Image (tube, rainbow, N blue to C red; front, side, top):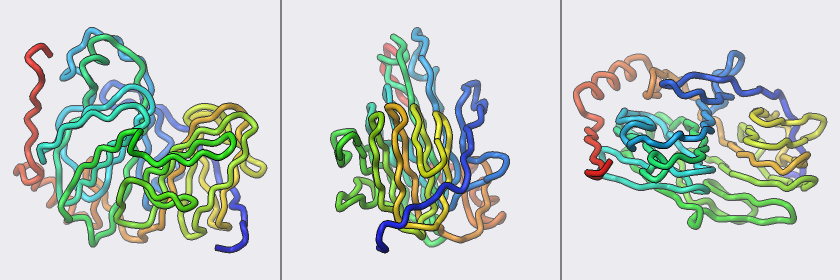
Amino acid sequence: MNNTVKRTIKKIYPANKVNMGGHLLDQPLPNKELQSLDPFLLIHHWHQMLPGGQRPQEAGVGPHPHRGFSPVTFIFKGAVEHRDSLGKHATVHAGGTQWMFAGRGITHSERFPSELTENGGELEFIQFWVNSPAANKMDQPYYQPIQLADTPLVEENKSKLWVVSGSYKGTKGAAPTNSPQLLLRGELQKDGILEIPISSTFNTLIYVLEGALKSGEHTILTKDMAIFQNDGDLVEVKAMANTRYIVLAGEPINEPVAQYGPFVMNTETQLMEAVRDAQMGKMGVLIESFDATD
C-alpha cells in the first residue's frame, strides 16, 4: 500500500423508492445514471413494520430461481428465513448474513419467522447482488448462513465494523467470494472518525442506512449511496450523527453482463438457456413446508 492516500467521492446518489411485489423498497443501485458498479449489480433496502396476523407463507418472497451471481442479504432488524432446492433451511437473525451463491442454478424462498408474521415487528435488511466471473457462473451453488456471533467484529474508538467478506486490518471475513472483495457493515458514533484501507483498484461504495457520514467535502445522508474515485487506498469517514452503514468494495470483473430478471450471465444466448433450464426444473424445485399451525 502507498502511504494513506485518501480516496475522494465521485458522486452521491439518493436511493429511489421502488415497488417490489407490493412492497416499497429503497433502491440506490441501479439508478437512472448508474446501472452497476462492477461487480455490484443491485442494492435493495427493505425497512418496514410487519402488521402481524399473517402466516409465514403470506409474507416475504416465495420460491424463485437464480443463476450466475450471489444474492447476499444483511439482516439489521428482525430475521429472514431461507429455504432452497438444495434442502437448506435456516433463519438468520439481526446482525447476520444470508450468503448464497446461485452458480449454475438454485431455487430459494425468503420468508420471515412465524413470531414476526404472527405478532408483527420491525424488519430491516439489505439485499445486494454480486456478479460472478464467467469462469464461476456455472459452478455448484451453495448457501451459507452467517449469524452475528459468527461475524468477525473490529472495534476501534467509536467504531464497530463487522467483516463479512475480505480482509480488514488483519481480520478476515466469514464468507468466501469468487473475486476479491471487502464487504463491511458498520456503526460509527457521532464525531467518530474511521480510516478504512481499501485497495485503489477496488470499486467502492458506502450506503448509509441511518445517520450521516462526512468524507472530504461531501456528506452522505440517510439512504444515500456514495461512489468513490479510484484515486487512493484509504477511505476516511466522520460521523455527523450516530450512523449505520455498509461498505461494498470489489475488484471489477470487467466482463460483459447480460441480465434478465433473476439471471446474470455474459451473453443473451446464456440468458435464454437460463430461462429454459429454469422452466425445465434444472435449477431445482422448492416445495415449501410450514408447520401445521402456520
